Length: 566
Image 1 (tube, rainbow, N blue to C red):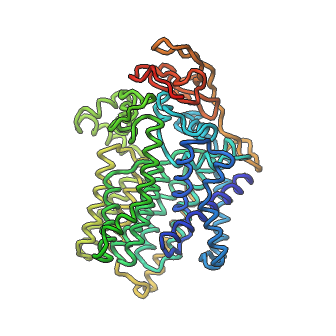
Image 2: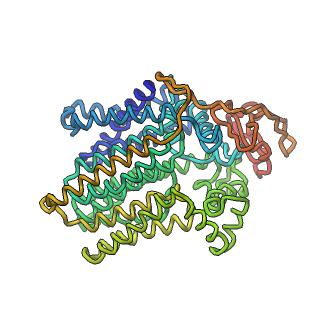
Image 3: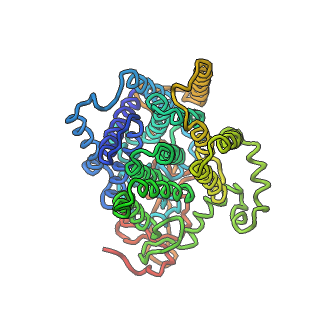
């Protein structure tokens, strides 16, 4: 636990310093230090993705990824640490939060006794990134290994020295720290009432994160919470109308950061990009195209790196989609890539053997069973139905009291985001933030004109009672969860090694046989065990180079089967 607390403090400082540099470069005057925490993932994670195309993420290469943190420290040294806006009470609360998260996460057990996606392929991906960088065509080995996320790159960067095998603990702690910290800091530092209320509404969603802090490398919650942060800046463009070009730049960069963590709802992304473009154009009619081009430089570069990484992993630029395939010898078979996409979309509709049919049949085929599962799910009631119902009431009041095109624009975007979630992968863990954004945006619009002088003593009592209730909710969810029977106060146990054993593969095209590792037992993954490892030993893959598996894998049925890159 002590090691994890020190690691959480160190890594959060590195992210914060990188974010300070980035936000300063963008020209944003920021009072919420945890906005810098989330923004820091952009330069560090993007550099990690870029370097992983060429070298493993360890040693000097890993240190180089923190260049923005070094520049942030230099910047603070020059202008003075007092200018950071950090307060003594805020710093003390952050240290207490780090200790609590280290205790909660460090003593927790892995999910499902070694099953699930983290032991299934997340840990394996981090090991590849740390030890080998990006392996060409690794999606042929196991289609889930083709998934591309800066969350795994960050985990590989942080997994150095004593933290080897412990990134799953650390990343869960960073998620809790960043989410709780941003909400609390936004409530305490914002001068505008609606911004405080927006953050208050998000606290129940964040509290739910604390319900399960077992070591995990899932990136869904990190990407979705960052969506809520991005939308708060979109609201500042629409409702406050101050410094909109700078705000638009931040929206695009943070949207790109969330997208690099996990590809997002296209309706949400399009809406945020549209608001950013509108904000740039509204600042001044002159030179709008030039300013639009400038604010798109960083997100555009991030998109190029993300596409290059996808191509190297799978041969497809927007994997798991199979559009625009590249003519490379390591390209996955189209059927295998399509299986990955159908698994993601179909399993959210019908998590059984009929998930393929759920994509081919109409809404009437899968919706009844889907809805029956949802009404029996506590998570759906808590993160879906409750904020949706409250949001409908709040939006009805907002549309009556706050008339104007801006309010309808915000309502339309939040509804479009919910529709995009339902039309793609309607599983609540893929879209919980969109429900809370729907409610929070409605509250922001309803109280957009409220000022501190409008808060009467009676209202203050209600707000204090609400704050105490939310604090109780955080404590309630924090104290839930399972723990180890044997506790080590110094450091959590490393990630499970799995039970993979060598397996001989005979290529379908008659090439020389070779050995990989394959886990024993149904539903078990490769975990943090030896590589190369696959849970699909019958996947029909071959080595690109018979002498060295690190040079990548190819599909045995590929048209490029006879070609081997030097």
